[in-house]
Length: 115
Image (spheres, rainbow, N blue to C red):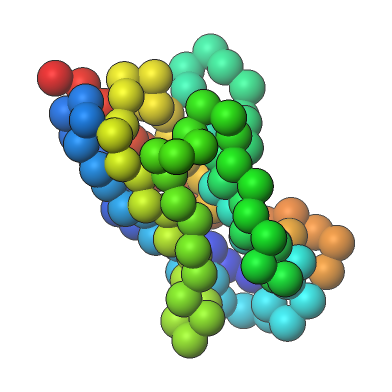
């Protein structure tokens, strides 16, 4: 089993920054990737940023140049640094891990960008 615990969401003004953190525990030796998805009200869940175990990254076009995904190997944690936040970034952000052919999800953390 894999457990993912997110933290770091909150309310921020447009143009501000937040950093999300996702701590992984359990049987993660077969991890292929970790990433962040988001879901806004009335919309489908979408990929925000993905970090593959070989170091490759993939970002949604809407966040390129503003968001950065990284990993703290020693702490089994994946981070999402979000800069220049916009109201349209408002959503519940979910941590994801693909491990052993299965997808695991965190409980989600709310990010609200509003003045």
